[in-house]
Length: 234
Image (tube, rainbow, N blue to C red; front, side, top):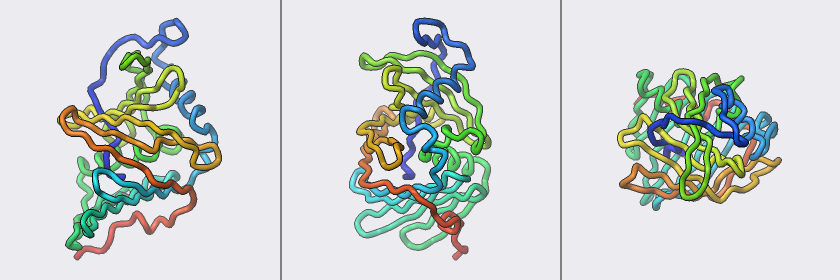
């Protein structure tokens, strides 16, 4: 889903875990607990991800590769469809009029990689998708307590994840690089097979505008790499 699940500026502070001050290396522990809460090792077996849903009157269909970078999404409104994709080397789009726009500009690739990384929860597979993790601190919001981890994927823009300290679920993702910053609140967690649990609702906001995405279905299984390749130029 091209809707970005990412947001808000990093906030320095102390991370309190179990009543004791957390060490910087605890970012990896926090991620491991978050992964265990939504399926653990079952994530390592996922090869591909096919998702359908709707956000603000736009029907979408998204495919994700969890073995190596790959993402493609179709968005349809009023009978007109646009497509956006990324195969790890090229970011591309097809407009409703069929016009192809492909780019290897570093800034655009970093943006596409961030979207693919966040959408497919690739932080659960650091051996496959290298990144640097560091803790930001403990945050309270609406009576809930969170551990905040900053993630810098290789050759990508950074992001934050907010992990609920009681459930260990990742219920907020933040893109501090967006202007204004974007945040996504995740809810309605469901098992989509094999113990893999993901949210079926995301509320994305920049503090002024808000979009709500509802997932209709998620299917896990192999996908052809050709789905992510850029189309031939017009």
